[in-house]
Image (cartoon, rainbow, N blue to C red):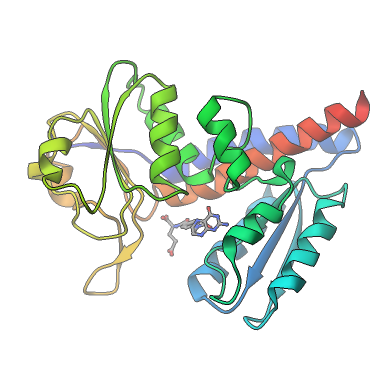
Length: 287
Ligand SMILES: Nc1nc2c(c(=O)[nH]1)N[C@@H](CN(C=O)c1ccc(C(=O)N[C@@H](CCC(=O)O)C(=O)O)cc1)CN2
């Protein structure tokens, strides 16, 4: 079997066209969606992601406000800026690019963002809403993974999904989203003694550990759907995921590439969440 490659760029293009239409409708009603993007420090990868987020906003007709700060910015100054953005009616979503410099408590910063503007879905309240199945903002990467799985046409109902990784931003919310879609979910992590035992039983595997070659072809059930969240570099410095693409593509039915899989979807779901936030605000304002 040679797996079908799930094209995150193509799916993103489709979803961003829908975002553009929704944004235009809001703008026509006097409610242009607005996203504030905050970058602190000089991390080169973060600079690329943030640039791509700002460009994606512009391409889809969203207002973007980009604040770039030196790595020496104080936590108090960042919290004050977030308070101002919370109060700004032109801003519907606030995103603080992670990671932050070590002297800033990222938990404190995330919790400072108003829940109705938490388009990253990172706050404790957003996590609680997801846990309870309430409407709220889903973290962009796992939300994008769900859209990628949905695009294969493979139903999750009654399927066994294995998530590798238990981070608050990807692994845990991913498991909850899969549960909501009626999959039976196993979460594996660095303390799981026999990872392959679990992944060999999985109809769907989501790999989100940040270590290349975590999942190889011999660890995958024939016909499984495999989603690769990892962003790593190989020995030649080339971008690669957590999945050994060559061997897994011989066994899986569908597989996401790195680059071109989950990454672009992370940015797309940020736009989706921002437009959703603006629609909610517009409904309230017009009531
Ligand atoms: N506040 C946030 N911080 C971070 C998030 C996040 O969702 N919110 N996620 C990651 C980084 N990230 C978005 O910010 C992100 C990572 C990767 C990509 C992407 O498009 N990757 C491309 C390859 C890009 C390259 O060539 O380097 C791909 O996979 O095709 C987008 C967004 C951590 N921080």
